[in-house]
Amino acid sequence: MERHEFLAALHLCLRPRNYLEIGVGTGLSLELSHVPTIAVDPKFAVQTEIRTEVRLVRATSDSFFRRRDPLRSLRGTRNPWRNLRHDRPLLGRLGRATVDFAFIDGMHLFEFALRDFMNTERFSSATTVIVLDDMLPRNVIEASRTRVSQDWTGDVYKLVAVLRQYRPDLIVVPVNTQPTGVLLVLAPDHQSTVLQDHYDEIVAANVVEDPQDVPISVLERTGAVSPEAFLELDTCATIARSRRWHVPASRVRATLGNQLAPLLTLTNDPARDAAAPP
Image (cartoon, rainbow, N blue to C red; front, side, top):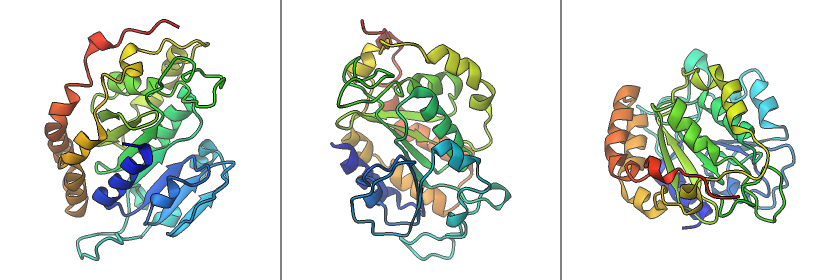
């Protein structure tokens, strides 16, 4: 399944109340949204038809998140999919809006992707779904920090191992979409400061000169689940129901963990993490 086909399926089954996109480009993924949206890119050049209310922000993601209340345009919106009394406005901690669905496809360097995830998580709830693009490079050249090929993922694939090491509370699901895979992060915690507290040491350990030592499991995608297998589960419906009925975060995490356990056991085999030769 192609990346945009998978994203379109997620939009439909998650029924989010809003959408955040980091890295817009020509708008191929942005046009999939049908809900109030914020899209951030310093050099966007949208060439597709946008069919929803969208706030296009021409800025780097770092500068965007440094703004006071960056998601203010989403505050107070309700779910356009269904008009239900129990569907409350999008208000998070301190009255800030929270993100239901986010797609991160910004600068293809590890430290940028890490910061984009950290900043997005600050505006999340337990039912937020965060998708990161380009997590499964097909060769070492494609995974270089310096772009030397037409198709380029950079070294953002390293985020998978970092999240598993530092944030075992998260549900981390690499998905084998074409062409270069995505990463689903479920049950985020906006109160966590673990990544921020360890940011310098994480960057020092992972930002290295080319060529990158890409794990064989990444290149061969042995640790990734098929998008079809994920969509066949009841996970999206569980997230939508949990959001609608304001299920406690601990229960959301437990339920999703149980549902995804059969798939997650396939993605956490340490024996598959050996690095490929340059």
